[in-house]
Amino acid sequence: MTLHPATYDAWRLAGPPDAPDVGTDDGETCGRCEEPDEDAPRGYRAKPCAGTMLADADGDMFCDWCGAQP
Image (cartoon, rainbow, N blue to C red; front, top):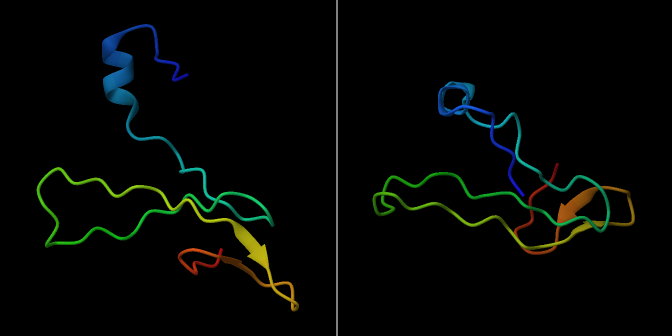
């Protein structure tokens, strides 16, 4: 559920959220979005990655789907 401020003006002037929820620990959902592409259609919004963060033998974290590292 998204909580909105009491008035439209407060909501409109608040700006974007601080940081998106992205996975950084083992077992969390990745949640990262791909970088904006200049060839994408107008209004296109990339979907967050649905992969899972995993730790390899050295303890380095990576996404099993997109390969992103925190």
